[in-house]
Length: 124
Image (tube, rainbow, N blue to C red; front, side, top):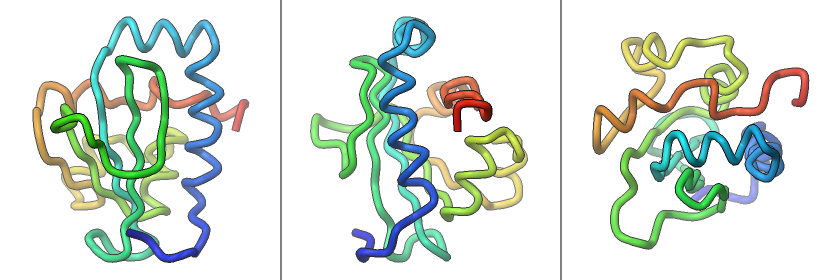
């Protein structure tokens, strides 16, 4: 688990919670219907990671590891790279190929993890 340091991603996750309560967010829940675990490290993937569950079955975001079995896909990022992907400044496929994002689980589920699931930059 991460230390008490604040991540830039924390604010983004709070915005996602609000986003999923909107009509656009509810449409995503119906369309995608998958559960993602996102591990975010302050500096280096695998060290001091903070986990979040982005549940697109229920339309919620929670801090902590997924506890109802296994998530459909798990992503690991550094804080900076997660913010870049979430704000559309880095393509998720490019992030994966560069090693900026690691994936475990279903590749087909991972392919549905696109910047569309995040609130638009104007709302951030």
